[in-house]
Amino acid sequence: MINLFSYEKFYNLALSEKVKLKIEKSILVIAMVSFLVHLALIYLKRYGLLHIFEDSNFFDNPIAAIYTPFSFILIYEVYLLIFYLPRSITTYITKQYEIITLIVIRRIFKDLSNLELSSNWFDIKNDIAFTYDIITALILFFMIYVFSYLRESLENRVANHVETPQIMQFIRIKKIMATLLIPTFIFIGLVTFGRWIMDAAPENLSAALKDVNSLFFDEFFAVLIIVDVLLLLVSFFYTDQFHKVIRNSGFIISTILIRMSFSVEGVLNNILIFASIAFGLGILWIHNKFQKNLKLE
Image (cartoon, one colour):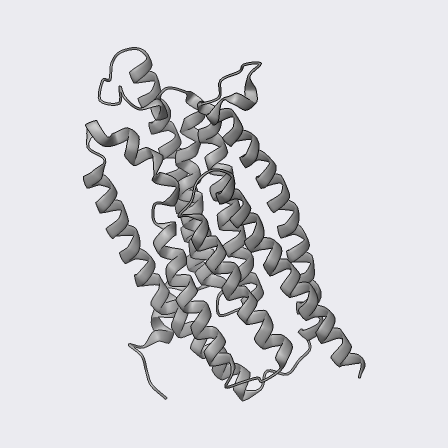
């Protein structure tokens, strides 16, 4: 058995329940402080005491300040995704869906700061974007609820199963993946943030803020596709059941659709996000039906 840099020790150091609680509290404090700082910058600009954000409406409306703490909440959601990877594949996928939904919610706060209340609502680009996003967020929230219901139904059926040596081995492999994802997550975060800081010079700030929705998550979901494929390949060593192979393959397609959504804007972005969760939901529903029929045989 390969001792990959004492992964168990590092896993317990970074992904234990105790550490999760500490990170949660830290993120909440950082989110509150960032909100107040962003709010302060907005009012400093409004009263003419700050002049470095003149070309950016990101510092015009106090509603836009909500965008900043949501960014830190998303960081915590990414941590939770890695945290649940060894524990439950379906919970891990649920976290992917929650992250993309929170990105849409975060975008709504940005949309709100750009709204133009006019009778020509559907002729104004920012107002149409807000309409698409708020409808998308509502539908995604409902689909995640249904997905979570199906996930809990599945977990309740397998709760009493004995953990065989094969299953324990699979869990160890997932722990190694989660352990490797932590430094990968930090590296991607530092590189993308550093690149963004370099591009966000005062004269380019508006363009940099326009692309902030895809900052980090574009690269991170590309890594998740690789993780999903590895999980699928490794799972072949432990099961050859058709419905489980299709489920895991379907989750890969779902992750790819989420990744693709970062490369487009407007209604096509919303359609790809909707399609990714709808496809994953359909895959899990059929998988559960398949699993139930096998139990009845």
